[in-house]
Image (tube, rainbow, N blue to C red; front, side):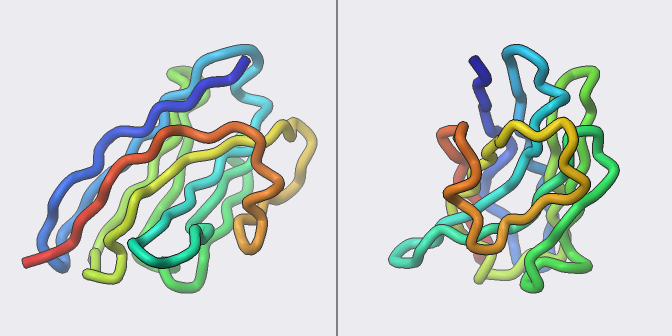
Length: 129
């Protein structure tokens, strides 16, 4: 059974950077698509980014393109979300999630929460001066 644990959240000033980690454990971790989602207070959860099982394809929400980078190290196995040029509107609880997909040529996080079957507990990111 797959388990996901997020870490790396915290308080950062606008323009700063953070790297979130999603540590995965279980069977055939490298066969899962991993996505990052976030939920700000009073708002619905939204997709941020995802990476296919062997890291060949990535997808980003328009709001984070050019600022966030997703990557994965299947040897660890961990998926990272490098967040640069952070803005106050990036403040949210960030969750990683997984869906079985060894043959998926691409991934999506836009209106796709229902596709993901395993979720972590979340890590808080606060961007404030």
